[in-house]
Length: 196
Image (cartoon, rainbow, N blue to C red; front, side, top):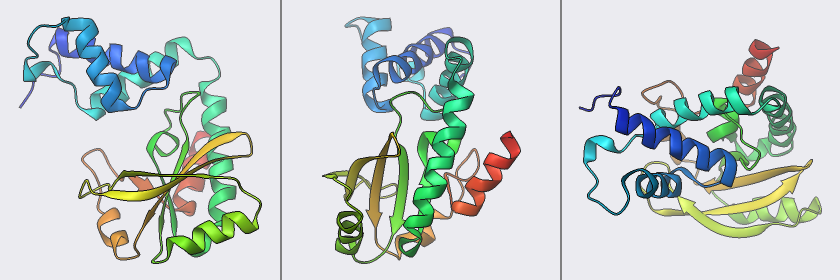
């Protein structure tokens, strides 16, 4: 167990949050750089490494203080995600990450996880819709193995689609420590309505 009020841990979380917001780093990279910035080259006490929930909290605070456009950006990206989820409804889309949590930096993509057994059908639909995408991989949300991911722009917003088999949906619907880690289109519409 860690002490969430450890000043060093809080400083690392705040530094990581700033790197996510200002430089567009992912959480893992931001943590590594923050640890180097705060601790130099010295040993890293485990108790000083914040978890992702602590970085989320620091990022919320950072955006509230320094980003006047944050609420507008969250609403805009959520509306764009709803429209995209409608277009991809045959692939069982769930939104996760920054847009789902409501902590959207300028660089944060709309991250949709699709649960369908044929990733090629997703690619074919995007090609038929005239979407130019890049193919890469991302870690599976549970196993850590790699899954295919497609990156593109939609309605002036960066998008990341990670492609899972339909059976992965069962594991995806389990809640995290701080609540659900993803939501379907109806759940996202609910969050939009709550914020309005």
